[in-house]
Length: 226
Figure 1 (cartoon, one colour):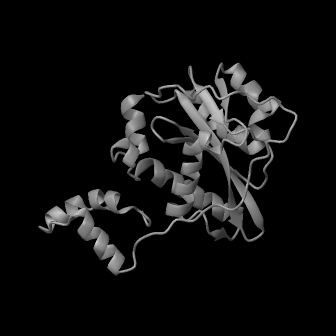
Figure 2 (cartoon, one colour):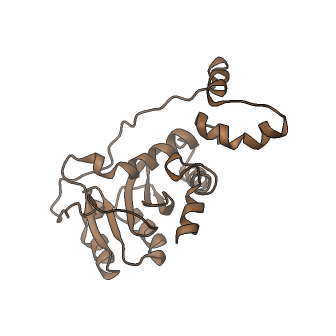
Figure 3 (cartoon, one colour):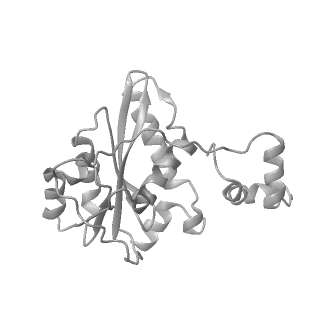
């Protein structure tokens, strides 16, 4: 966990501190990290992957007032770019809104629809009585993608125009993978990027503690509540 925050780091190190008979509070740990230049800084994304200027139907946001209280109730989807020496490849993600678990993903060297469809198909075996939420990108609005959702009787929800904060959780997951697991670096090739992505998502799901999950991992919350 190379970029774990101070509060999570304190919890992760609790057993080590106890075994060494050390009492280290959050502020003390924060000061130690600052003294040794070990505090992390955030980066802002600078590349857009959403094209909402297209002919396909754009659905309304139907999760705005929904109380999410179980896994597989709402899925959020998004696409982010990954750099390679030869150009960009694109990571399509589907995240369970309740547990924050990434349940489907695909890395492709193209922004075409196929990557999003592959990510969706990886998640579909868990689909039952849920809503799929995304931005209004052409991939998610396309006939092929929405037909899959309709066949599975999955509700379709989308952000409203220019309201990117309505898909904030999906964008937050993108940021975590890049900021904390080094997916913001430039990879040698797509194969290298795929290995790094698989490793990052496994760590995110299985190891990373989430403040919003009361310092549990997505896998823990997903399995306990499913």
